[in-house]
Image (cartoon, rainbow, N blue to C red):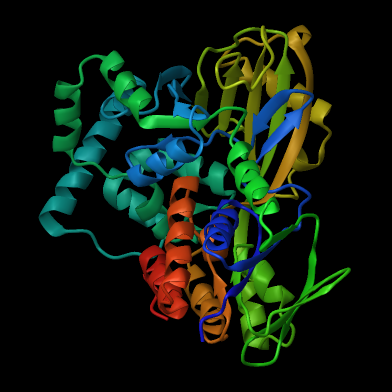
Length: 471
């Protein structure tokens, strides 16, 4: 029977877009969000008129071009092109982030350049002649494609800093999803074709889009739309205490001040999948044990307000592994209205474990520690800083340990066999996916519901597409 009432757990982009499209199509939709604001990881902090995103999020027309058109039509004049002036700081130098190629070798010292170049060439030659042996380990996967020298100089330390885990304990799927592998022919072709960096920057500029007043304007738009619909309810600041389960399907969503009947409704969860599993009453013990094995990288994001009009002049700088911060984003006064006139700001991202010293210390102590390190990249004097503030992201990125697929099979096997329960989105699928991909998924899911298609088939397809897991 087609269910016309939907409960959505989580008010991030996936949950809000799904709810918005379904409500516009006449469905009764209830959205439940733990935080007092919508947006999830795609949020914006408004600090006395200064706007800070949780890191830089850019829409690229290289992927999901139809989503770019969707947002341009939805937010005319607000969703506009942006020039992403991005750099990589490595070996004490700044290079174009989107133009590394063979230039990476030029950044090395002469001895390392020779060793890395020979090792890389021999590694690629062996791969061409004899193929690449299957491995589950990320460190082996990288060495098989880039060589041991580049692994030791760059990949190993960088991944360990980002993931806060030794690459030998991570799945090769991280490499498949996050590390582009080019052949030598590709490097040479790019070197010969794009001789001027201005050409490449023009390509980047034409492919990037951003939102006036910050990324959180997307979630604010959908939240406001839903708030004005009679058939939609959004509960912010409502933490789920438990989820009633009768052995076959979800019966209720139990909040601190109310109990929402779910027996004749579909429940679409976008919250972290392990959190979902731990909320379900009477869940089988083996599924609960599996869910407790999920791991995430945490992120402390430091927002810094300054008196300067410009600091580095670069909108984004990715930083080599010897520094505790992985990326620094700079906002200057411009058409995106993120900082007051005459000022600039920094958003500094630090991947951490919650046991790390830098996770626990105060904002002022943290700034005191990392300011001299930032000054290796660009000068920022203490007297030019107004103040700083922190946001903690406990579920910033999924940490794909070697046996993570076994964990997913156990938990999603249970979800698949629970009659009215589905888990979607970045957090719900335990995957790397940006807002354009989340939007695409949300619209496709809403279409499947409206067209009365099997949502279990939809869930099954998602698991295969993102994890190559058969449910």
